[in-house]
Length: 562
Image (tube, rainbow, N blue to C red; front, side, top):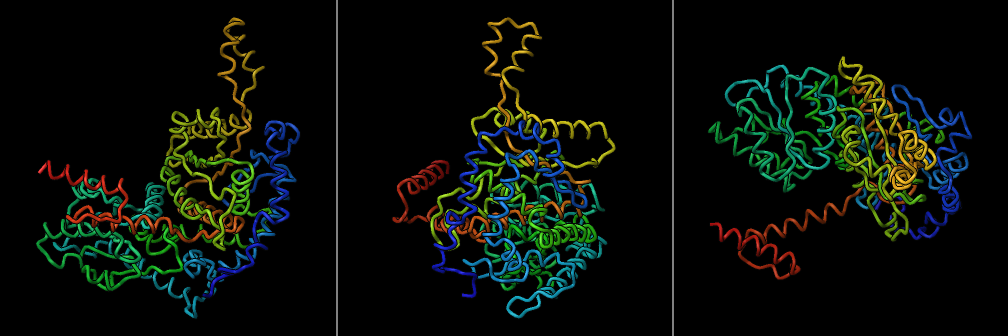
């Protein structure tokens, strides 16, 4: 296997716990747990200036973390001892750093504007990428200009994207974020759930004469995706009475061209997926067809450009001024060393309402692992539980937990300097809430202040004593603030790539494989066997008693209803 140390007995030498920096950080974390953020700001009026990074179109403020200069120095030593810089070059140069699947990890090649050549097994993938981008552009022009005609000769007005996981969530997040920009004469709908309710509701509102389906599946055998694709095809045939309707209303993104052609999709309408791109990092490829069809190819190109700019920063900036590296190290500090079990992603911009879900997949599917690169169990936390939603909605839902719950949950607050509407007053109210929440989480409210406020409101001593414990906020809860100039294709590309590289750095420092997802594969495999037991009369003796009984309960219920 042409991997990078797969199975090597260097494991004991590379165990993270054996690194001097790791051991130092563990001891240092014990000291920092007693330090309050308010005191750190009180002692250092220049803290924001030192602990923030300003990039073109992006400000990253990490000053509200429970860290000092010693913490940062220790984290930088850890990054260097873990080999972040060397692994970064391995990724960009196409080495097979996905060691359990013996694959390169080259989503960065999908947006590489340098003109350099990247080779994988002797193949010029840069040339392949440019060729596929040209095909995407040509498809966009055909569909958006109206020259692509459906079975009745009418132009396409709607695109239905059928996929699941990385084939769905990335494009959906981007089109939702950017639907206020571009020339959107094409409306895009997303189908991911095998629950028939979703596709039925979407198809009900569409004219079959004017719909283009984009089916995205690497193998073209994914159960959920292909079930929905067949439902769509049957719906189309029922209206068109055309057995060749797939040729006029379907395109595919897949590595299995044979299966796509068997489905009825013309070879020229099949777009490539490569094994050196993981699903959750694939929106930059033909998986992003719904983005390009919805917003136009120029907007899609701007998305790629923004990501490329972040790639350049990640590859070239010193670790101490490297935004993805710092974002990753702070997450590791909070999770692995300070004991935080979760992290919230809280956008204060309506356009980013799917971003938390997207990041949940990107990080938890990548780094939700319990063994290191050598297959050995680790005794440290690798990834926090990622969750969140729009900030304003969250303030009236779960922020009570963030402020006064027993668990400390670090949070990324994401906002934009300029809103997407002319309602400037409302945007300033939005930003004031973002800034106020990070301040409140940092400072809290102490008992003395609570007592003074209650006394000023005329409360008696007895009333104050009964209320004070309920109103104290301990604060000292870490946050990052990320501000983009404005949500547009380019700034969104930068933001997504920032988090992609964060995930990569986390995996390297924690010594785990970030680019496989065997847990997901197991679930898919078992679902196939359970489905067989569900629809057939035979009893599968290999099933556990709970699963077998649930299947029997379903069958009995179905029989009783018939």
